[in-house]
Image 1 (cartoon, each protein chain N blue to C red):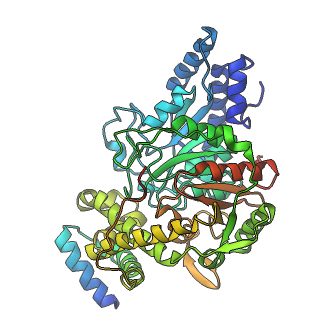
Image 2: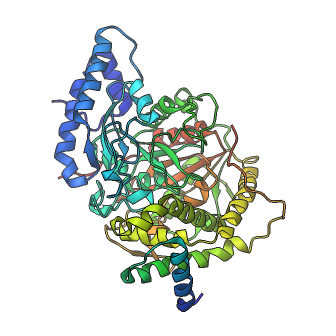
Image 3: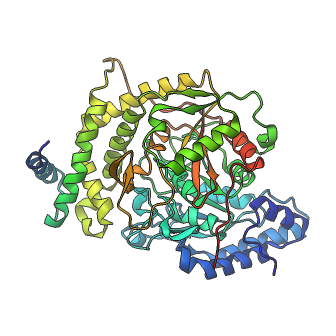
Length: 60
Length: 463
C-alpha cells in the first residue's frame, strides 16, 4: 500500500474505532500499519482447506 | 556478614532448613543488596519489605516449631509488575494502571512460592504492557543489564533479568508472550523456563495476548528453576486456558542426563539473520550435545508473521478503551503499535489463527522423531540502551520487534522451552525446545549442559 492509501485506511479506521490520532503520531502509526500489511500476505497466501479451523493449542 | 547475594535458591533453602541461616537474615541481606544496587540496575519498581520480613519470620517460626520446611524456605524472590500483589496497583509497566485500585489478591504463583517457603521482596520493572523485547520503560526508566549498565536487559521481563543476574534475588517470575522470559534470560545470562501453554495459571496477572501469554521463572541455576517450577504447578480454575492436569515435578529427574535423547538443531530460518555471537552460542551447545542432525521447523517465517498479527490485534483489543480515552498516557512506541493493531482486519487475524493450527500439527510431527530441538534465543547479545536498529545479514532492522524473531515462532504454539545461557564478553542464550508437557526433557538437557560447564550463568563484574 502507498502512504496515501495507508493514510486513508488509518483515517477511516480511526473514525470507525473512535480513536483520535494526534498529527505527531501519524507517521509512527502509518509505519506500524505498513508492517501489518507487509506481514499480511505471508498469512493470506498460505493455502488452507475450507475445513481448516482454529484450535486450542494443546489439550491436557 | 556472609555474602548471600550469589547463593543459589536451593542452597539458601537448605541452610535455612538446617538452621545455618535464618530466613530473616537472608531477607535483610537481600533488602540491603537491593538498596545498594537497585538505584543502578533499576530492576525493582516496588519493594515489599514489611511483607517480606513478616513472611521470613513465619518461615523461621515454622522451623523453630519443628514443622516441615518447604523447598524454597527463606528464598527471596520477586515478580514482574504485571503479577497481582495484594495491596499494590498492578502497573504492568504502564502509567495508566498505577492509578488503579490496589490488587485484592496475590497471583496464585506467588501464593504457591510462599507456601514453599519463598519470601516475596517486590515487583519488577517491565516494558509497558509487555509489548516490548528491550526492557526499556518510558515511565520507570530502563532496566539495566548487570553485565554492562549501558545495555538493555531484554524484555519485556527486563527487571526480572536484571534482578537475578545482578544478584538482588536468586529467583524471579516473568511472563512470555512472544519471548519475554527467554529474551532477558539470554541477554542477562540466565536460565529461563517458558513452560507449555496452559501449564501455569495466569490468574490474577495482567494479560497481554491471551492466545500466547505464559508465566514462568528465571534463575541462575537449573536446579533453582526446577524447584520454582515444581512449586508453582497445578490447575487453577481462574485461568480458562490452564490445563487441568496434575503437577508433574521435574526436580528429581534433572540429573538423568541425556543418554537416549534425540536432539536436533533447528535449520533454515533459525540459521539465518544472526550475529556471530549468537551463531557461536548455538554451535557451542550443539557441539557439547554431539548434535549431528538438523530439522526444519516448517514455515517459521509465516509463523512469526501470524504471531505478530495476532499479538498486535489481540493486544489492541485489550487496550482499545484506553486508546480511545487516554492515548496520551501510553508510552508512544507502544501506543502507536497498538493503534495500528486495532485496525488489523478481522479476516487476517482469523486466518492467522487457522494457520496456527496447521503449523502446530506440522511442528508436532517433528517430535515423533526428535525429543528436543535447539535454536538461538536472540539474534545478538544485548544491544545498547536506546539503540533503535541493528544489522542482520546486511539489512538494517529495528531492534524492538526483531529481538524476538527466534522466540516468536515457538511460543506461537505454546511449546515448552528452557533458555540456557552461554557465557562471553556479553552473554547470549540458546533455546531447548521440546514437545508439549515435556519440560522435564528440556530441563534435563539444561542441567546436563550446566553440569558440563557449557551453559553458565556468569557473574557480572561489579565496581
